[in-house]
Image (cartoon, rainbow, N blue to C red; front, side):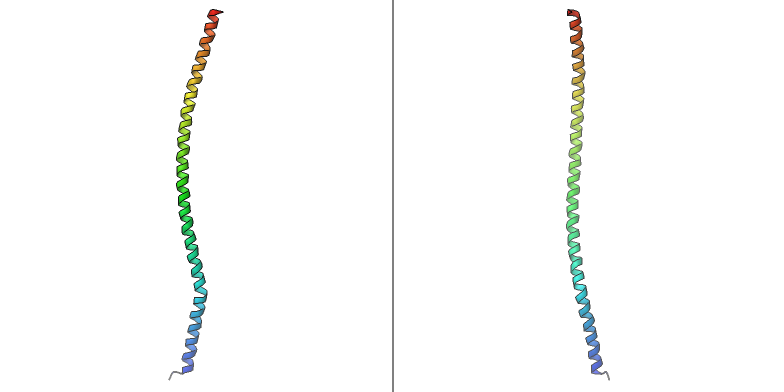
Length: 96
């Protein structure tokens, strides 16, 4: 027959192991859950930052296109100023 003391010893050992595992595993699992939540939040934040960067990139492209247009207009005006200066010089030569 099975000795009652042996069964009680085995039950006590099993309960000690279960208690030890739960004592060690529960905090670890809690920390893993917190880490997982934080990683999810950081991932969401990174997605938002990436969207902002893309919008900023598009804004910069638009600004650079506008600057190119302004440069072209300034070049045209500069050419016209040179032409006008030459015309004024030739008028002064005819008058003078």
